[in-house]
Image (cartoon, rainbow, N blue to C red):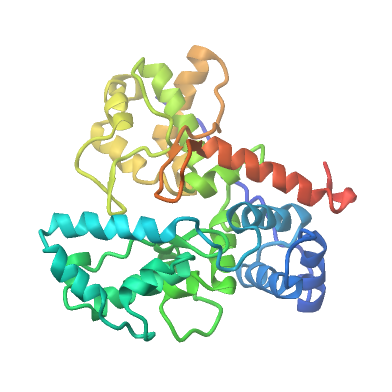
Length: 362
């Protein structure tokens, strides 16, 4: 079967020339910050600094995308308070104590030990209010407590943080691809919990990749669900229709363990396996192309092109973007939330931000 030519994704944010100077750029960003934001000069400096380091065009649309996510995730608090955080930590510690069969008396005695900041670990847990404090606590517990390694096994449950709630794993991957633009004395993990670091990595995951979507709404969904999740969910929808097999439209085309593809086949791969004859592709070729699902290149693969060619012919033009269907789960979330809820909330904030400059509205 001939492979249809698929146009390469076009970057949504071409860099404007000449690029604004620092003073001009900060003033531009400041214009779009919400009235309630404190230290506007500081926020404007960090947001524009991230744009300049990544060479992202500081257009109203892009600035407001970053502003909308910061509003949603932290309401412009560099280290946002998380309600009930100490209870979350106590629950996690108790679960891990039971898992390794550590006597409670030993744990209680260990937690009464003085920590590096002078307080006991118990006192620090009871006083927890922010994820930055929680991250520092777990780092100290792992390295300092007599049973820290056996209790926690090097496990720090804080996986996202900062004013844009960026994944620590993403930040560590980002610095392997692009140098971190700021001098640092600490780990990348701890940089995520600073305002400038959290904003830099948040802008990077939000805007520093080509996403050929018709609406910025889908970029916000990707921010929550993972890059290209909206494109991949549309691909899953096409596979579901062609195969007749039920598929969750979650944007993950393969199964993953610790960030790497697992040996166990995903539901998407299983459904595609029933289409190998129609697609004229072997299972090995399917896996080869699916491994590109987190990249722009997936849309250039034979698999992507053939699935959509078949689906378009059978059912009419199929969407190339759709909202990932994901329920959000976290100890911090106390009610039922979804990726769609998150994306729509941020999209509304984005429009409000653009409204601060009437000329920027579509």
